[in-house]
Image (tube, rainbow, N blue to C red; front, side):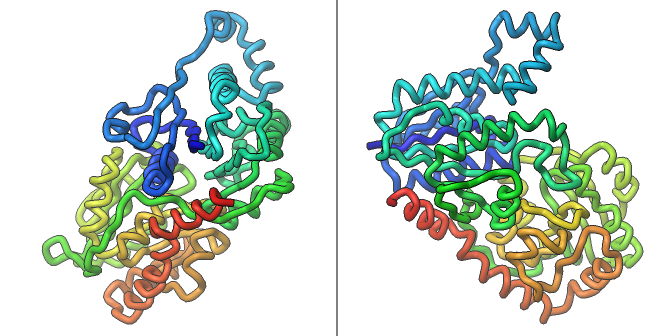
Length: 401
């Protein structure tokens, strides 16, 4: 019997959730034969040009009925009431219905059904809650992020906890159906226990899959005579590197370049745009994933910026890439975070987002060979945990049960 992967969205592989999902699909397909995929029809078709491991099925992303369009334009309060009590927008509700139709017609073909969410809607997970499966079907749900937005920790928390009751109810019904629940972060799993009863589901902590293998020599590569620190990826509002930039500027180390590549929240950009001079380069635009990897690979240090909160359950996909590149990482993360847990207390280039004293200490030790060696030892010890081989092994253990 075959395996079905239902993935909420792949799109053009530009956001972290899509990168992680597509990477996992490719990793699993190396050992699992006959893997079918069901996803939204906005996917870049060239992703599947060389896909020969199974069939690919699509359902519509733009799926509003004429009645729903009319309600949205003319009777918005009905849409609001529907969204509160159903727990989903019109589009999301229609996607869940379309996935259910597919499962009702095709579920008998599949021994394993893997549910992948982009993080915000969990439509694949919700879709299984009203489907009857036999005991021979393995339902595996992967949970990348908290759900819904009011379940996020500060400062990411949003939404209305009262209105989101129905969203939590929907996901709880799905969890009641799932045989196996996988979280990329141990702390994210513990965070889920605040809102959900995971019941009889078997729990595994398996990090994000990776796209590439990289065996680069670890050197303090320089741009001319200058050492390069690089950050790639989105700087959301809570990830404001203002303190880091202030300290970096105060030190006035002319032998170090600091580069930011990726979209920046408008308020954050207003705070930091005037630093874009001399040894600091700030590019407020998204760059392709492969280009980001190339820029990181040419850097001496990699910079990772998390929020200034006391707690973070997330395992950023960026961190997985950084570890596998094998370069020293300057990490700004809460003391209680998945990244802090993985790096441990001895990691020398780690502090919180706005700790000026510790940031200055890190920046003054960029030439300290002993600290660099210690950081690389810790990073290299994590490589196995983030390796394609380890991730595939852990998934195969789950799917073979």
